[in-house]
Image (cartoon, rainbow, N blue to C red):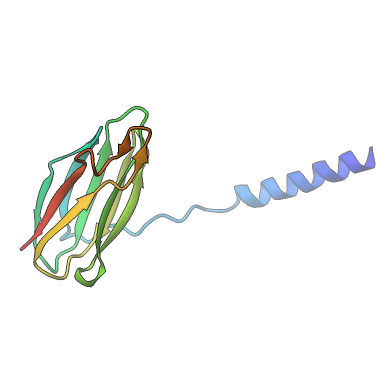
Length: 131
């Protein structure tokens, strides 16, 4: 009986400590951010070409319209200020902010692999054009 009371007391203390914590939120995007929304569907991004200006922050909202399959969004060019790799759960929106530093065309893609193969090989890719 004493063990049960001790366990319950410890659980109560842990729950009270956790309940008192506040969740940190991401800082708001800069007011001058270039806002872009991409619809993420089964093996596609819409639009699949995005045009932005170098040196200005980009606020990218990725809206998943899939009901089962999760995706991700990857741009892998850290030297250009483009080092983005974010998971997109099915049916959810994810927002990411980054600032491209160099002009050029940069591929983005979904790097997930499923039962039917790589999402990239199925055509889930696009281009970020930085001017």
